[in-house]
Amino acid sequence: MSVPTQPPTLASAASALAGGQSAVAYVTELLDRSAATDSAINGFVSLDREAVLSAAESADARRGKNEQLSAFDGVPIGIKDNISVAGEPCRCASKLLAPYNATYDATVVERLKAQGFIPFGRANMDEYAMGSSTENSAFGVTSNPWDTNHVPGGSSGGSAAIVASGQVPAALGSDTGGSIRQPASFCGVVGLKPTYGRVSRFGLVAFASSLDQIGPLGHSVADCATLLDAIAGHDVRDCTSLEGSQSALSGSIDELPAGARVGVPTEFFEVEGLQDEVRAAIEQTKAALADAGCELVDISLPRTRYAVAAYYIIATAEASSNLARFDGIRYGARDHDADSLIDTYFQTREQGFGDEVKRRIMLGTYVLSSGYYDAYYLRAQKVRTLIRQDYLNALSTCDAILAPVSPTTAFAKGQMTDPLQVYLSDIYTIPVNLAGICGLSVPVGRDRAGLPIGAQLIGGPLQEQKLLQIASAVERAFPSWRGENA
Image (cartoon, rainbow, N blue to C red; front, side):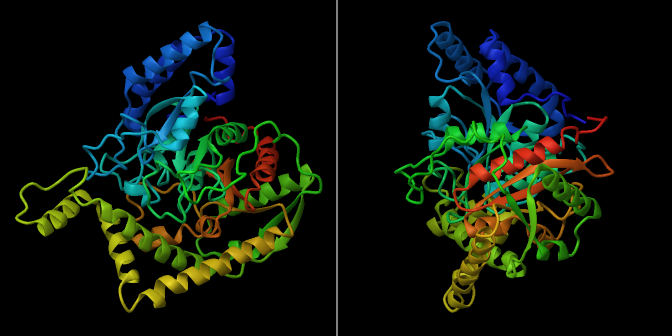
């Protein structure tokens, strides 16, 4: 097990720096922990020690002049390998992008740097964010820090694993169908998928543009609120960015909203394969919310059973379009032995893409092809509208929805060999992306094997404040979920 009993948090890091510890010393501790830990976890695909130490020296120089950019000036943040950091690799865990270094900062990275946060390495992921286990990486499988024979979840498995193992206090991931919340649940950290449009996607390598959203992973609800404050807000470079999407959240999460109501969807507990321990953990969460003063109400989300089918049509269609740019001509790897331009395309993509990426490109190309567009893609978009309406209707009667994150805890490496089995396991998370609303995973216990269990809370559009307040109440109810063996 590679999980620290006292993991670093943004709050503890800021306190240490304010108390006189140098950023260089703090960063060196994390670098040394990573050197001792990550060989067993493989949470990073790259980590530039010299660049991180140089940034820490700059933070110390600012503090020496009392010119620190924020309370978090000098605090490291892990960055998923599909988010651009100028001068660093941005490979999306793919062989095809192995030679590529980003030439600019993503908006979220710009905003982190403006407050003095230090980008700390490139976190492993499923290739192009396509997967639920971080087994689909060209740079090796990431292990779950609680049990290295199990997966950390995906696609932001590297981000969750480096936070859980104490290599960074927090990290950024991306969530297209649960890719922050599911690894957060599997690794026992907090993970937040913001409302679509609240955080700029500029500089995020696109998987499915109408679903992708960058969000934070940390050891506490407060840390996720702090990081969301740092990265959220309107951005003219992202045409889907929402006006008025920036508001301070981190200072207002300790009090439960007056008369808070939490909806419990009946359909979610009828899903085949729901692990008994996961079901029991959600029941305990219901009891904790009731004890905290929330009113629990039964709600219905009747189109739940259509969500997986609709998602895997829409997401693969958009992936097919977005990944067409990776052709071996403009950047990335190229097959130099090809006999023609067309052959260059074919050979580069054949050699550069992994099996799961190829599978999704082919499926997406099929549903967009002549004669099938109306039957599949257009119909899926109509179903998406109905699913969003289900959630908006439910959230008009309650402040948040309580649900599992995944039907099971982290599964063993190599266990999920059937792609359909993996797709079906996303049933609880993908409707949130289809609806464009916010969702969060917070740890509430462990199964008999010692693997973490997360509870999912879902909120309405731009209702992160209520969501974080209710999640904070859950967090306070489970202060010792780590148990004696942590």
